[in-house]
Length: 287
Image 1 (cartoon, rainbow, N blue to C red):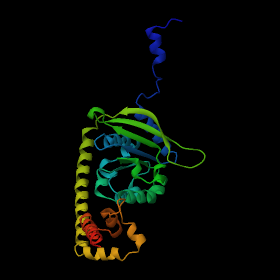
Image 2: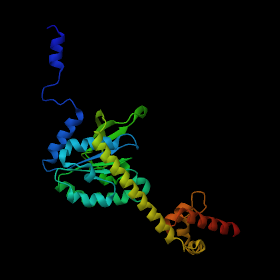
Image 3: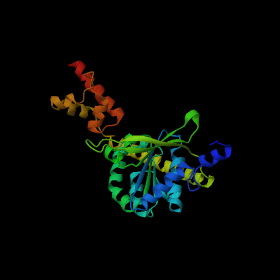
């Protein structure tokens, strides 16, 4: 048989019912799965500015269609997530966009993990497609990490946003149930969002950003007021009266008092903990 250009084109081209767009194929599959009484969790991982939010919105719109509304179904903290689970339509989508929240909250990991645990059964019952935008999957508890069916890693090579690498989990069938190994399935380059969708998202992100900054400032002010009447000398005396074993826990590897350990144990701000550590060090020198 002699191969001609026509015969090569005939046998090499994709079947008529074969969708060439890999993201469409993935989203169509997810849509079928959740309509068969399942839920689906996807985590989008990458540094800020790599295109996580753009990719997440593209995916949400393709899976949930008209059931997904940027103004209603994008959340930024644990409280919003729990409220939205009951309000989100069945087969809909919730997008948890961290958008800097990690920088504003030291206990973000704990609060969001607890919220997800509380809401995970409702997500399952309502057959939701849930997306998480995180700088790193390691921010979540190991038990929660095993709930994800897709890991998407975003990169911006040569400062070009939108390169996404799609992975599926591979678990040990026997033995210890550790974190899965993630197999790379395909690489996809995201296009720009429609202008109307992008404008709605930017407005929402800006508004929620201002609200989170205000909330953070209020927390700082409360902490400041709480520590206004704290006397560093009283903390030093309290530490001096501790048993030797407990005092040893406050020492650094160099044998001096650690301001970080003092701050953690007594719930002190950094400046006050530094003053206490300096006072303890001075007393040690005097002795």
